Image 1 (tube, rainbow, N blue to C red):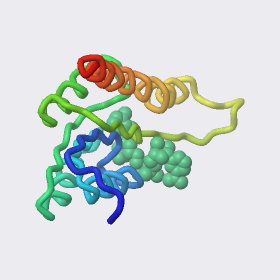
Image 2 (spheres, rainbow, N blue to C red):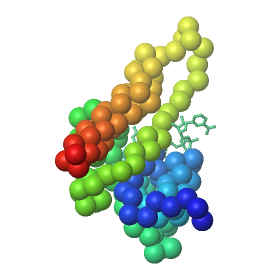
Image 3 (cartoon, rainbow, N blue to C red):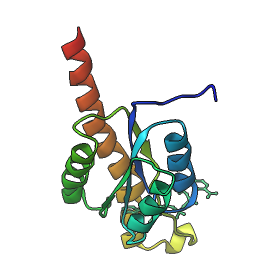
Length: 138
Ligand SMILES: NC(=O)c1ccc[n+]([C@@H]2O[C@H](COP(=O)([O-])OP(=O)(O)OC[C@H]3O[C@@H](n4cnc5c(N)ncnc54)[C@H](O)[C@@H]3O)[C@@H](O)[C@H]2O)c1
């Protein structure tokens, strides 16, 4: 395989199932150590399943829609990865279909919290960590 991520460390949000679980598997197959983050209890089982192939796959359960949780989720991920992070795959997302004129305000807010704010705040934390590591190298 030409694509190798040996020694790289990755966080995959929304990794309990669906597309992001597949992407987490691909990162892992390429050699990365992965933490799956998800609101669903099955995230533990998903990590266990991936570990059957002798992998280094961890999980952190949490709700990314609440900004107060994001720091705890990020710190737990970092802890499981031994304090280093190279890759963030911001995949957790939700959708709700309704005519725009009837779209419920609480659904609108939730969608922005998960699909937009959590993506930004996770990227901010990982970006800060990677940036300070790069600065140390200079
Ligand atoms: N499937 C598609 O055709 C498609 C198309 C365009 C975009 N997307 C986006 O790609 C991503 C993955 O899609 P999918 O079809 O695999 O969806 P999915 O519902 O199977 O997976 C999304 C995952 O995100 C998790 N999640 C949702 N809210 C969360 C929260 N508050 N905190 C933590 N985790 C949370 C879910 O539990 C789930 O495991 C989503 O962001 C989706 O909106 C999907």
